[in-house]
Length: 428
Image (cartoon, rainbow, N blue to C red; front, side, top):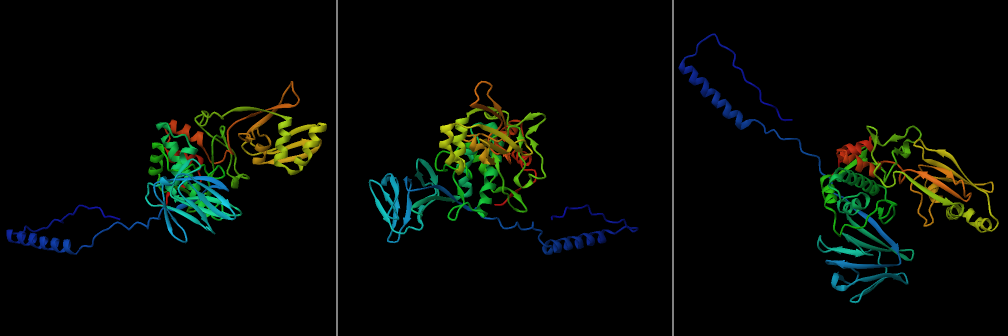
């Protein structure tokens, strides 16, 4: 702590000094000042605690037996017999598996690699990138052979990873969305750092899909708003007991937030609103109506329940009586238990299974579990689903964050609203 200067006061004296004594006093004062100036200790601010280094993250791009690979810039492949430099001049490689080997074949090169565990391609320069199945990525590419297939893994710094996540999770084209995009950057970083401590797989940390966070690479053009948001919030995460929190976020809550999983028994639903205005009301899925047929319902049931799959041909042949019963709802009103009754047999569905059994004809799950059912008055084989929102409803509502940003809220206020029990901390 730096001391502040005070005012010095010289007590009054009953005697009147002579000119010689005055000169002596000032000479003595000057000498003491000079000695003090030479010997007083330097006051330094307390040293900052060591800054943590930015971690890297391993992202599973695909797991398969045949994909496409191309290099933009130079990459080094370190093989047992030699190091190879690969770039755009080698054309597009077809990556496949033959006889438990990874094969890379292009018009210019051919590699048949024995026991490539792992096979690592390192960028020679920071600007180098590779294209995997049409998407451009920066950082290292790792191919690992596992159970007759290869896993394609992109390893890169967390901040570079966020550049490929944020634009796929949050609209980033409107400057008025700036604070919401910053909130999304912090949420995505928090999720990633928590995953580093709890990896999704043995060889990778996160999936590149909605199983974790949607990541399509950071090797292409990144929206300016995303770059600014990631840089402005660098290293900031939401923590619980000093560690990156296990957070969730979703597209649209429909005006009612679901309590966190760990607090379901004690918490009540939280309205996603301020001064009577619902934050996510601009979302295209704020309110919706879907219709389903009994035939589609039975097909969906067979897809999620093995015993129902065995019964489906007989049901289709003879016809059945079908009824839907909402047995439980969560504190927010979302359907927690849906009972599908077919000829007095019961097939209970919970959680995501509720959305799956009510999927559309293309197999797309119902947008959310915040709904009620309505029978058709004219067609007994048809029913309607009137609902709200898109996603599980926990954590930050992304359309709600956009609404809060448009109403003048900063990203810290947005994060505090959706994660009131967590603390924002800069880790690096």
